[in-house]
Length: 106
Image (cartoon, rainbow, N blue to C red; front, side, top):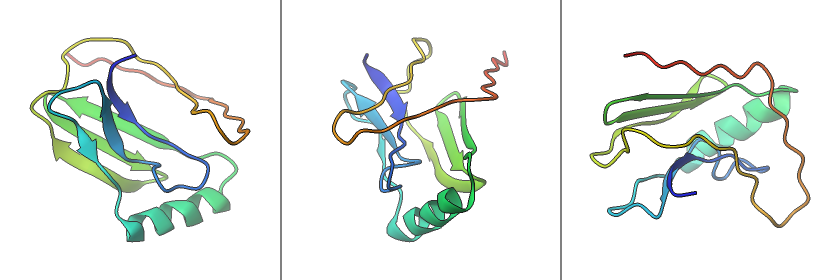
């Protein structure tokens, strides 16, 4: 798949970041180290984590367990496309989703 992605990983170094696959110019917003530590602590304290992504026009907002990680404008956010879930290869990892809500507001 190509397009913007909201990242999540096991150690929280990329969780809450926004990157783009095969998008030129690239979409990129990496979470700073202080926010990474807050996310890691919040993920350890909860069995399930809350991950919220809001896109309104060019504005992308991401929060993890109520911690805002991205609030940026990207001029090249696609207006349509696919929504997918990706698990990177490498370290054996299990991911589960529950209470998944998708809304489109026109």
